[in-house]
Length: 99
Image (cartoon, rainbow, N blue to C red; front, side, top):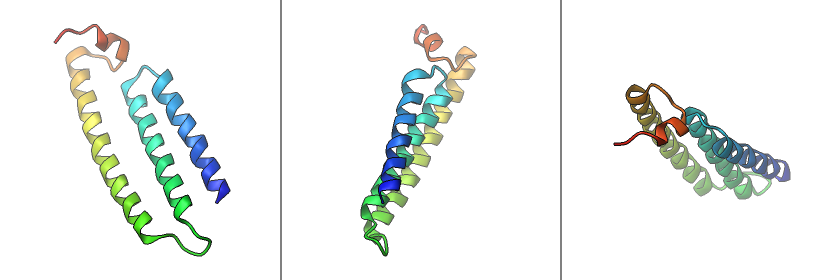
């Protein structure tokens, strides 16, 4: 159980690093998905009691995965739209746009 929690913490730091340091919007979305995966892993590891996992925690994680997939699809569609408008996925170039 400690191994899973340590892995979740490591994934959390990797995801935060991706969100903070990257300029590409696709890499930022991937970083957010890594953070979501680390939260789900930590939730499951805390619900594990040695023999089995709590079914309520498993169902909450499955719902979280489905919502995360929908949010990632929506974010990627916004990125595609921004790329069509500006020709770039760089966040610094998109800040200069006026709507």
